[in-house]
Image (cartoon, rainbow, N blue to C red; front, side, top):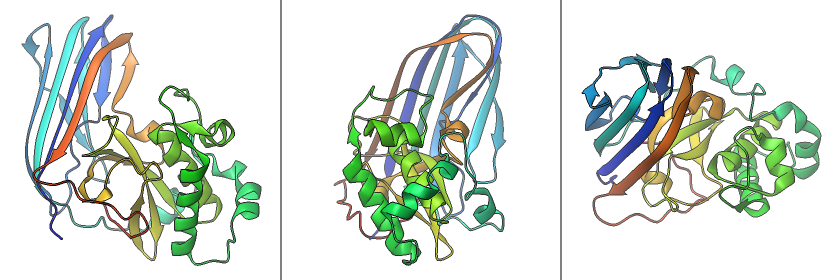
Amino acid sequence: MSTPTREVSAHLDITVHAPTELEMQIAVAHLPGLTMTETLEISVDGTPITPTEIVDDHGGRIHRVMLEAGRLVIGYRASVTTPAEPVAVRATDRSIYLRPSRYAESDTFFGFAAGQFDASLPPRELLTQVTDFVTRRLRYVPGASDPIDGAADTLLAGAGVCRDYAHLVIALLRALTIPARLVAVYAPGCSPMDFHAVAEALVDDEWVVVDATRLAPRQTMVRIATGRDAADTAFLDNHGGAISLDSYRVDASVHGILPTDDHHRWAHLG
């Protein structure tokens, strides 16, 4: 089935209180096969500024700006007309994405995972079981978690938002020796609409996407940033002076009818 054209956008209104260096990850990742048109407009007190673009190993794009105090307005819009090819597996992926990380502290989950799942099962079956477990275990409650909460906090709280679901899936998979990572995406159909986070697992030499929140169809998600956890994929990183995020808006839609997702079928981000 062909992927419909996807329209995505983000608008951020920020007060910069003192000179600083700001990095944003809001642009669609540049990947083989993907075609799109896009605009990125950044201004301070109405004066346009040009960011420095840094492309990472996964095609993700960091836009960096050096700022003086003032009102910063960021507007991004893209029309994605053809999907990306499935991402290639790199020689280092298994090593990097089996390691514990800041928000997916898998080394604390070895005992729990061993008691909850049969590690001798094929990775494909374990992936389904872990995703279903997190879907059942957690409630989606905006404001239920703090930005510093990791997967262990989420398991104990029993509630969270998309990044919390993804971190718990990732931590459990890594504890079961399945490499896993977090991907920030635009997600048509997601409600509440926002930047969305999902998990990717390396199974049978391919990266497979799962979403324990089940808030949006995976077929129409658009990759923004990829990393070990949310520390690598934040849409804003501030280095220096204080800022206030006064408001932001995210939109994602498709041309035509939004597809239905069977979350027990394999899917790849495109």
